[in-house]
Amino acid sequence: FGIDLKIDESAILYVAEKGENQKTGARALVSVWENILTGFQFELPGSHFKELVVNDELCRMPKDALLNMLKRSPFLDYIESFKREFGIELEFGEAVEAYVEKYAEDNKMEVSAALKQLLRGASTLNYMNIKGKFEVTVEMLEDNNYFNNLFTTWYQEQQVAPAPAAAAG
Image (cartoon, rainbow, N blue to C red):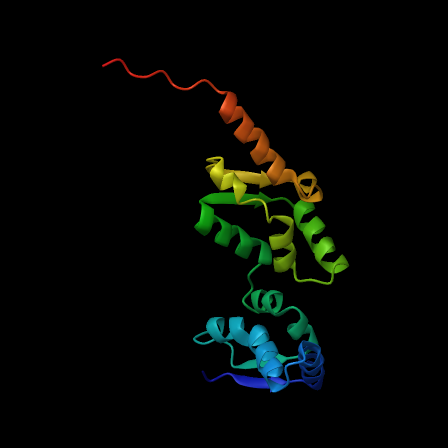
């Protein structure tokens, strides 16, 4: 692809440690490298990038590193993918972004992974026929069961709602 790959010693040590933990020999090393580099393989060819420097930081958080390189926000990436899948445009304010970033830091995970974890129940919005924009708040993220409870309440209301009258014919 015309991209020089430079692997820092810290990346080699990171991969060796991860591979050793899998206890499957050399196959583990291949698997770890694939998990780290797959996103770059699909996103960097055809771009202006001529070099990829792989270090332990990139190895720990490859998706965030890739999004950063591409000048794409993990928040916008999540919003776009959620909208493609469910047709709902999530909105995040600054407080939500700060909460997610702190959550990711505290849990030693990528921001993109933190978004998936914190919003794992948000797909239920699709079943509730939510359309257009939906504003996510910090309170929603703080409550692990927020989206499940929202769906349960909505579902119960649907069961109680009177059925539409049958058309006379």
